[in-house]
Length: 75
Image (cartoon, rainbow, N blue to C red):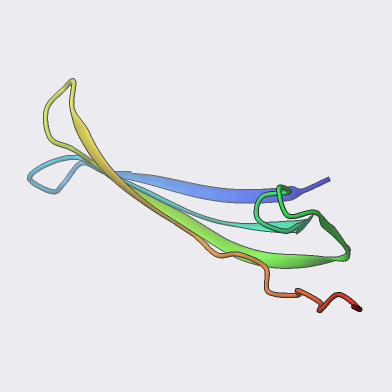
């Protein structure tokens, strides 16, 4: 189970509206769960920015930090 907390703010005072979202996630997943799960939670940062070019078109960018608690397999 993941726990997520996000905050968002729409800036309309700029020449084009900009939506900013910042948040964090407490997760046991590795690579969004595709790489498996760990026994402890890691807190990772996530955020995105959306610039509304027109009423029907927007450009967005996203950043997602990945947990780094990988362990070497015994061979």
